[in-house]
Image (tube, rainbow, N blue to C red; front, side, top):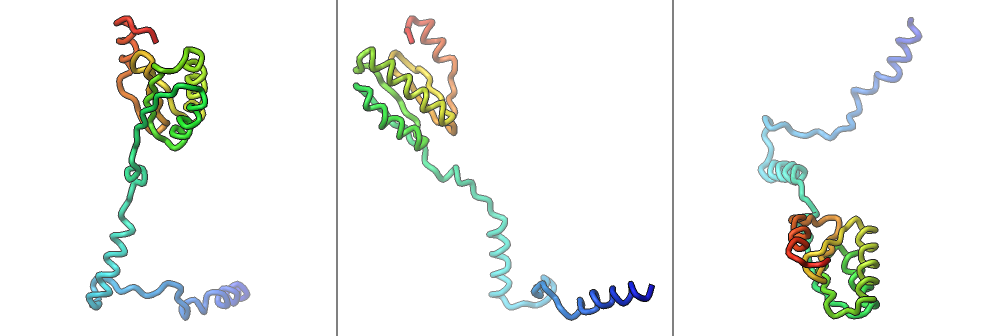
Length: 147
């Protein structure tokens, strides 16, 4: 038993001499005003939570492509998390289909979605933008708009 006590004393005897933690004055002890203000402001800074997403500005880009090669610039807007309103009135029927197919793929790959909002007009939203008004498509179809 003496052996264990000797080992314990060897490892734990010097513990009282060394203190790893710096001595912090308690609120009851007197401290100078600048030091107390610094300690309080450090505590305040640690307790603040800032949501980075709220500082980002959401942007909406209106585009009216005529040829398929315009779709690359639109895809770049979607990749940078911008909402795109796509007006296909001036595009040829073949280009309309190709542009929509390509942009649906881009939106899907980024977690976004494409929704028709009027005749030949679509809104493409990134994953972080919600779209309220799902009934709009049904309402348009009921009024004779072919999408």
